[in-house]
Picture 1 (cartoon, helix red, strand yellow):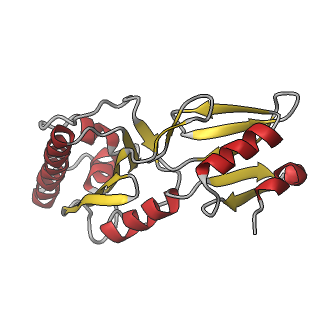
Picture 2 (cartoon, one colour):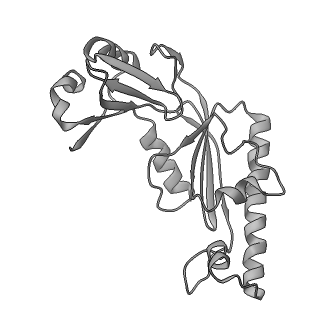
Length: 224
């Protein structure tokens, strides 16, 4: 079954929600994934609408706020980027870098130690850089969380690195299972400002995903 997608950036949010209420038999808002699940008469899933994080709605699809404060954080081995958005306006951004990757092998020092268990001079340098890398990230995050009332945290980070974020001597200002967390659903090729900014722009638009067999149901959403 092939999934289709439809970018609804050109339709006002209120109009989109009116179409859902009038043309879709059933719907359910999922806060964690920030999507509206769309269902047929038998309560079976036929698609979903991915919403931009700056938009706050309730379970009845009523708009509560359209200028939510959202922190976007992308981390990979040796590179990280932060973007803070208030609605559609960027109010802060920064990047981090560290020498964490073995040049010849091309994988991180963390993965190397798990495989080999060695601790030579070069390895110790990379480990020290790794520790400082996450301490710097958390120091910046703490300052941002103190200065701003951040409503959602959009994160892109390999599972291997998550423990280092939360076990740093400088404590991360949010927990692993913080209710505000949102897993960025797009691939970020490298954790730098350019790529994270491009990702944020893509996530600003509401996007409709649906199964090809239900094409007819979603015709009202195809505005010219």
